[in-house]
Image (cartoon, rainbow over all chains, first blue to last red; front, side):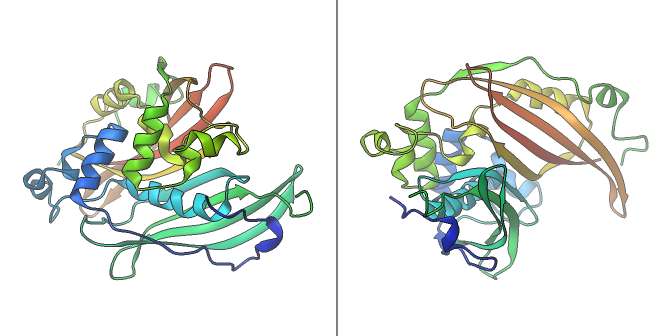
Length: 145
Length: 153
């Protein structure tokens, strides 16, 4: 029930409302089931450690999904997510908060649509942006109601 | 450590070759379940009554739902062609063209879009760009994913 965001509301530098997620090992199992990603580094601690990790880690696509939620919560129903991507530069662990943030980098009209580009990222508890990404959305105009 | 190239001739030959499709019927329950796993309460993916009044006239899939429409045989084939000791997901880029709705018949195809090899102090690394295309029953491309897989020799 996100509030609708309009093109006129947004400027370069506008920050997205911060979204904090608290993934648990239970959530990783739910994600594994829902997404079909059964790689053991996400639920089998012994296996994860044998690959050199210090424990099970959050699925990359689950973190990407948190970033997806960050954007879709912000833009509202009558907007469209056009492009969305992220890279995995570091790992995130269940039991630790994942803080999702974003900032508008570009605003332009093209082919009859009003585009907003943002950089988005997920931070570990140290404040390191271990999953940086970007999103392009189309927003409606207030004028068109 | 592998002495030879970690990118095989077979992989190079397969650049741009599109796999056979895998077809799924999108289920409302699967859309709900994925949103629930994310902990994403947005009623646009969960509440039919709410979504009926919205811009799509019904629930639609949340942004990362497409990856649950997997193409495991393609991924397995890529892994078999390569001789990586370990792989990592480097990143994903998704482009959306059409909403994905319950009842859509989506066919997924995969191809290797690009391969690069890099020598590092710790050994050879390969960067595979895989491209997955999701077409709906109307023949429209609903989404495309570019996924960079990093393979270590």
